[in-house]
Image (cartoon, rainbow, N blue to C red; front, top):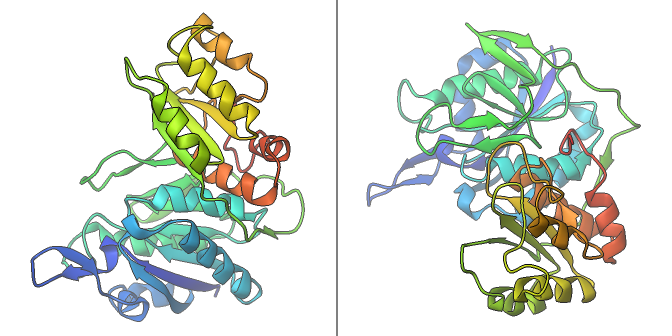
Length: 332
């Protein structure tokens, strides 16, 4: 029987009503397991409380803590399950995909839209499926298990705020699904490049700016002293309003000349960016040092930039890491 470590971090799955009637994390790791007695037939489980937060409060410090906990326990367990709030789960899954690379052991995140404290919700099912996947032969990588789907950490997005089918794999097949409790794998584990690699540095000074019709360059100018990387979410396949002589282009050029990174992305959920299509994109792409997110998810773009900048002190090295595919984050 495989040995799986549960790392509990809070979230809706571990929440109870407060005196004001709102939900807040209150159920610890050991109590979570008591709600799903069937787990004893799936694997041997140890439980540790990593922290107990609403996922709105989970960020780079917590991602590093999770990676560190996995590293410290890596030799003693066959896999890991992390319970997590749904709102930032895709960010954490993407971040762990960069912080723990070429893992031979599955790292599975799950949560729920309703608390395990409430009867007949998605919490127990998601938790049970997460452990079943983590204990399965052939399980691999960093994955989110939710509503019967197994989704690669770099391809996952939360697409619904309340429904049980909250997560979707963006422009990439699901790794596996559960049907009537049976695991049906779709994607086999890829060949690993070498032994597992852990990373322990992130640069949090990354900003995402959504372009709006009529936006001026002032926002970029105000942000530049405070951030090392800027992600510009443009329209459609991407571009920059104002043309070759526009103030926005000059502001982007100032970021790049300052040794900062600029990544062009898109506000459209599927199919990614392509700055080569329109002239408004080509003028941006021609600036030396401009990067393009292409088909990466927004969560992967942000966390990969944080990881790349954490490993390299210079923009050139960080840009090279950003453009190197990791766990199928870049497909085209």
